[in-house]
Image (cartoon, rainbow, N blue to C red; front, side):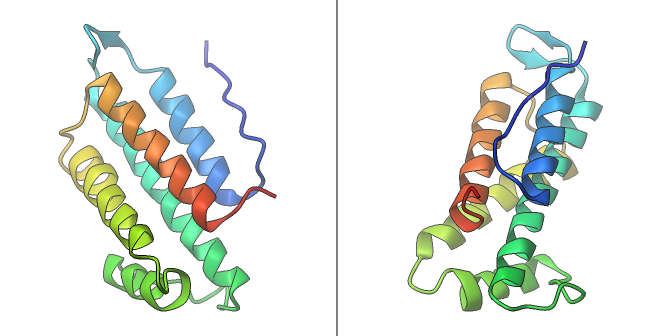
Length: 136
């Protein structure tokens, strides 16, 4: 039975994050490790997409066109630097941390499967989303 996770905040990024949490909640665990890596990778991918959706939403709120989002991780970094993180190096560091952990290590390479590590990354992703797309 899928555990329902509720987030009281609107927006596409939060919907993606809820989906990632639902995926991970259905993964089998043994001795604090997820035993089936495929859905864990899927959950990491979905959480990373939540980050990108949050950035897209924040850029749109700053006046960017909805049909012209960044098309690469470097373009996202540039948009963050120019539009969202002026005088906020923490935001850039958090994005790089989440890119490396969620996308590269978690999804692409499938290296993250300890339950505490996964929870820490998902918590950091939610915090990042709330930093750039404040709860409504």
